[in-house]
Length: 219
Image (cartoon, rainbow, N blue to C red; front, side):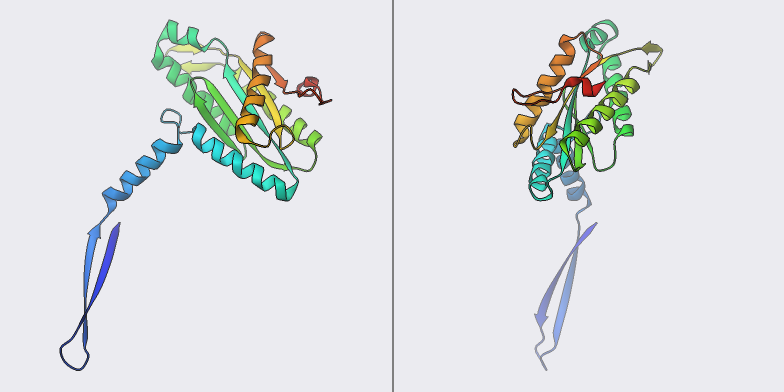
C-alpha cells in the first residue's frame, strides 16, 4: 500500500505548473492498524468477536428493531466443568477445546448472526432480528440452542485425547426482554444459570415476572 502526495509548483513562465509526486509506503502502518483493530474487537484465541464488539452489534440490532418491529434473540453458553479439563490435561487442551467449540457454533449460524467469546468458557450468540412475532423468535432461539447443544455433545479430539463436554445454555428475545445491551446479556446469563442449576447440558428461557412464556419451548 502506498500513499501519494502531489504538490503543485507554479512555473516561472507562461503560467506553467509542475507537479511533484511523493510516494510513501504505508503497508506497515496499515498492518499495525489492522492488528490494533483485531486486538480491540476480537478474541485472540478463537478470532470470534469479543465482548466490546458484541455490545456494539447488540446496540445496532436494538436500534434497528425500533424501526422494523422485528424480534431476535441472545443465547448465552457456558461449558460445564471446563476447569476440570484444564486441571487434568492442561491449558493447551482447554484452548484447543475452545477453538473447536467456536468453530462448531459458527457452523450452525447464518452470516448475519454473531458468535462471540466474552471470556473464559463463555460464549454469546446474537441472532439477527428477522422474526415478525415473539413466539417465532422464541422458537427459533430454542431450535438454534438445541442444535448447538447437540453439536457440542459430540466428541472433541484434543491431540490424542477424546473428550466429551456438556453446555449450559440460556436465551432471551429482544427487544421485549431488554432495551439495552447489558440488560439483554444479564437476562440471557440468568437463563444460562437456570440450566446450570438443573445439572447442565440443558437449555433454558429467561422469564421475566410478567412473562407467560415457558422454558418448555426449548424442548
